[in-house]
Image (cartoon, rainbow, N blue to C red; front, top):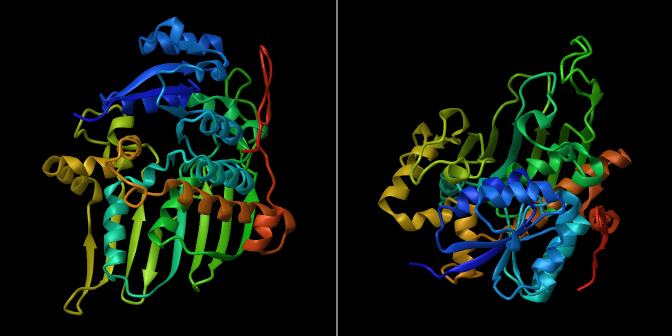
Length: 422
């Protein structure tokens, strides 16, 4: 039996329900309070998870005055990540932060530096790291199976159809495509999973120069649909639906990036890493959070269509050319059965819980804040390069990046003013 950890949640919208599904599988993690400025959403949330009204707050700052909270799970929109994460850590709480770290490198660096300055245990939700796809790929790379790695490609198109249906159709708020709240679109929304995973596998190389372009061309809805159709609205998304880039790292590595959630291409190809001896090709990195966040019981089964893949092509130990399917999802199920401790590597929140309780140390845990910060630098390079129309260096990215966060948040009860200093 592990140590009990009392957790408060800030933000009771869509993503919080996935977090709650996972917490339900970790009995030592006790949800003791929740906060949201939307009182009706908060009340329904409390009823669903049997949290009494006295433990529900419309002002999270009042909630954090309690003396029975050990850590905080932050589930708000992108441009509130930095303001609220800073407030939480400065108030003395460890913080689990929904992805992305922030919409800009500047804000991500604030969050990262605040954790270091306050000594709080920060984690960023990057579910793609916590799957057998990543675990196996990293083992193959570290064992030298690929030889000298010199080029890689990130390619993910989640919505392989047009027109792009408004995300509210899937129960998601339109704030997901509201620039003021989201900051950016697919480049940071799902890009954190794909780019972050790739950077981790490549050993977090230092960026040298980035060339990038954002696109906002595919419209929501279809002008030919009848006016009676609820998705008949025909307008561009409020944020980019495609981000593409090319990066060169200081160690000579090159990387192609294509992130899109709306394209007129049915198959955009797999992500891959190629080296002098062999290469890895993979698809469907875990952007869902694993079995638990999908509502599966322990050792449940994800639908095959969203199971991560991983194939090695190259030379075996005898010098023969081979192609090997590593079947990461099936291997993950076996590892969970035969070694229950492996679960800590296959779930974000289980990993953070083990970090909080000392099972994992600063040295043995996945450093998701650093991975998220490196991802933010690369994403910001694509944004700034697109704005300038030229390539941009890492030093220029750091110098030009600025805050996009909501340091003054309008609420039904007035303005919440946040402090960026620590």
